Image (tube, rainbow, N blue to C red; front, side, top):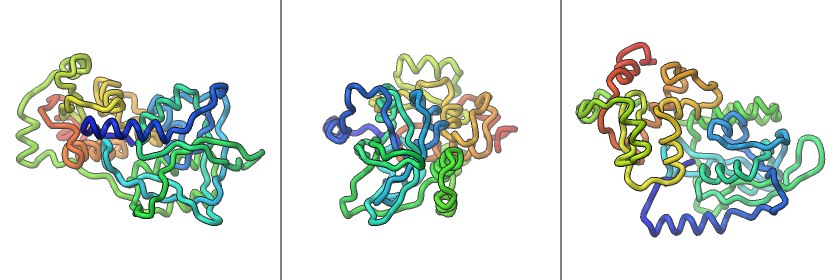
Length: 309
């Protein structure tokens, strides 16, 4: 999950909370064991975000006396696609997952991606084979006021793909497959208001790329729609927005279970669904990006031509 920028006071509070609830790593530990029960189970998902793993291979493991819940409400984040996974203490409960070994650099980057509302703490997990071990886990403690919701389609399918690829317990995978989810959303580009915004100005690709350095404002493009970012950005937002000349391809790679497209015009229908969800969310739910124009060739391809999947 990606945090959205707030006031200076809010930022300071978030930084303080992040510092308090990121438990320290021993200096001698070069590869940090991270128990993941959500999207981070998938090494493909980790790599799609540039998170560096170590030399040790992943381990299948179980966290006992906890249960899997989806009670991480989508708040103060880049996009809204559904609720995110968490674990809650439960007598006799079992949560299957994967221990990935991250480099210190990889863990630092993952901290940037994870919501500051997650704490990072040490827990004891039991591998499918071998002795119990200590591993880090991202968790939000239950304050008694939490409610559960449905995960987003992309997020849940990422969990299922990670569990299948890792060879987790069959009954656990069946449970994941049975969960209801929030489906992708459509971006209504034909509304009068959005038509006016999209047709307000025609951009060239080099203007998008140049803005990544000048950031006055920073521009991105999604499915040919050009969007302007606010003046104040979170670190992770800047990382995502400037990681390529077309945010379409960047977002497509977040649908890691589909594989990486060769280029932005080779996205699959599944990737297209998620990208439209992002486009709808950032322009309406979170208001993090403002429609300022279009890339005409790309826009016509995605909305009127062969790319209108």
